[in-house]
Image (cartoon, rainbow, N blue to C red):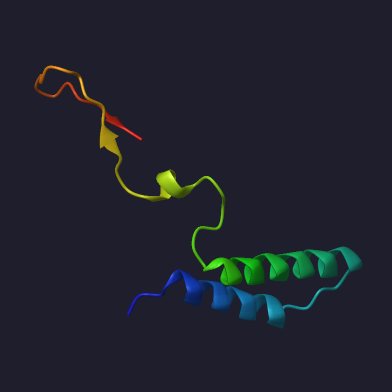
Length: 77
């Protein structure tokens, strides 16, 4: 069975929990990273970055050229 995005987030959360920060800045970074992962899990565990939906999905639509010409339509995202 393939990993789901939620499983990947939970695995990442476990890794962050297990990691030990050695400096104050490191602690802050781990805290921020943990917050980010928890927020993504609450949101549904979907795409991490905003506005990446169309780029992550495969394909797009073919721009119409009006009159059909062979090979003239260009795949447009």
